[in-house]
Image 1: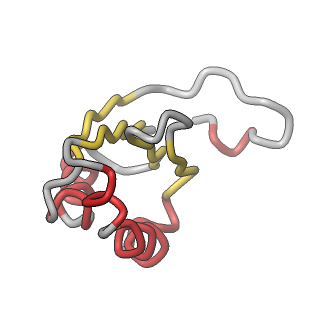
Image 2 (image 1 turned 90 degrees about the horizontal axis):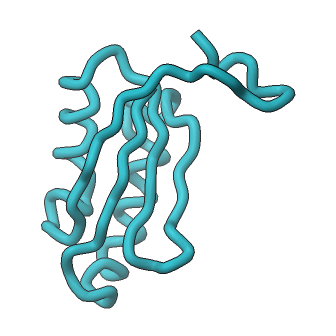
Image 3 (image 1 turned 120 degrees about the horizontal axis):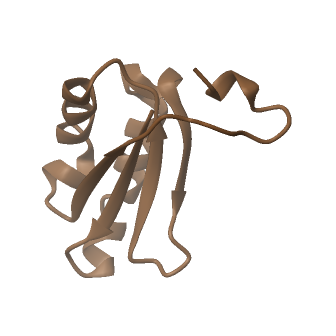
Length: 95
């Protein structure tokens, strides 16, 4: 499992200009079925994507096609982790 942390590196109006394209990408990319969750930070300075992917290379490919990356409005940090514990109803996330 991978957690992708996004940090905006351009002013918010520039980020918002790309927001709909970014959201459409998250819905329509081939990896969309592997997205566990997405969200914006409450501080409005970035967001996150939790993604199941077969490899770090697949995650990197997903990132470089994101409109936030192509527009240069966000930096991306990738954290690979193993799911150890989940809440009720989320058991499919383990393994």
